[in-house]
Amino acid sequence: MSARDVVASLRDGMTIGIGGWGPRRKPMALVREILRSDLKDLTIVAYGGADVGMLCAAGKVKKLVFAFVSLDAIPLEPWFRKARESGQIEVLELDEGMFQWGLKAAAFGLPFLPTRVGLGTDLAELGGLKTVQSPYADAETLIAMPALKLDAALIHVNRSDWRGNVHLFGADSYYDEWFAKAAAKAYVSCEELVDRIEDHYPDDAQLNVFERCFVSGVVHMPCGAHPSSMPPAYGWDIKAFKAYADTAREPGDWAAVADRFVGATEEAYLESIGGKEAVAALPLPIF
Image 1: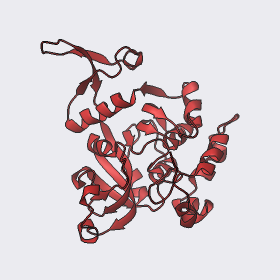
Image 2: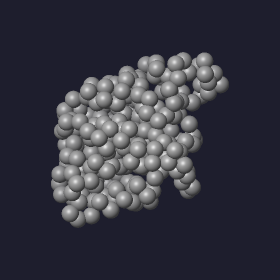
Image 3: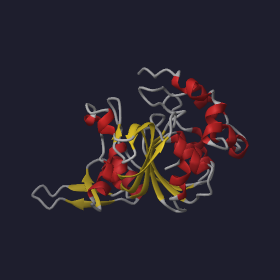
C-alpha cells in the first residue's frame, strides 16, 4: 500500500492507536499523511510524542487517550499542551500501566482487565473508571481497566515483507505488539521492504514481534519515523524538535507553520530536511 491508501481506508470519528513511545519510533510518515487529509474527529490512543501534538494542532483530534505526551528532552509536548490547556480536546489520562492493560484487554477480546494500578489516585474518578471485587476469598477491590479497542493502529517497523511479517530491532519494542493486536486493522510502515522475509533473513525470526495475521497493510517508507528515532538506523532530530516546539509559542498558529513540518508530499518533506542522507546521519541518543 501507499501512505495515501492507508489514510483512504480510515474514516472520520475512528479510534486510532499510534505505536512508538514519545519521540521514539513513531510512524510519522503515516501521521503526516493524515495531516494532509480531511480526516477529523479522531480518538487518538498513544504513548504520545509529536504525532499527538501535530494532530491536536491541526484540529484532527476529538478525544485523546494517553499516558503521557512528551518529546523527552522537551518534557511536555508543546502543541498538545496548548490543546489541553484550552480545552480543545476530550481526554482520558491514564497511568502507563493502566494504558498497557487497556491494550491487552482489547487484544485478549476482554471487556476489561483488573488492576491495582490507579487505586488511591484521581485517575479512576476523572476517567469514569469502575471497580470490581475479587470473587475469591481475598475480596480485593480492583480497578476494572476497560479495553482500549482500536479501529486501526499505525506502527513503524525496521523491516517487513509484503505479507506483513515484521522485524523490530533493539532491546525495547515498546508496546507495538499490543497496538497491533488491539486493533481491527493494523498498518505498518517500514524502513526496509522485502518479498519473503524468511528467504532474506532466516536467522532473525525472533525479531518478529507480532504475527502477520494482525497486519492489514504495509507501506515502504524509509525515514518514516523522522523526526523521532529509529534505532539502529537513525536517532531523533533534536534540532527539528526544538524548532517545532518554538513555533508553539504565542501566537502559535499551526496553519502558518504546518507546511514546514508536514510538507505537501513525503518526498517534499524529506527534501526539505536534507534527504535520506541527513536522516541517516542523525546520531542515536545516549541515556
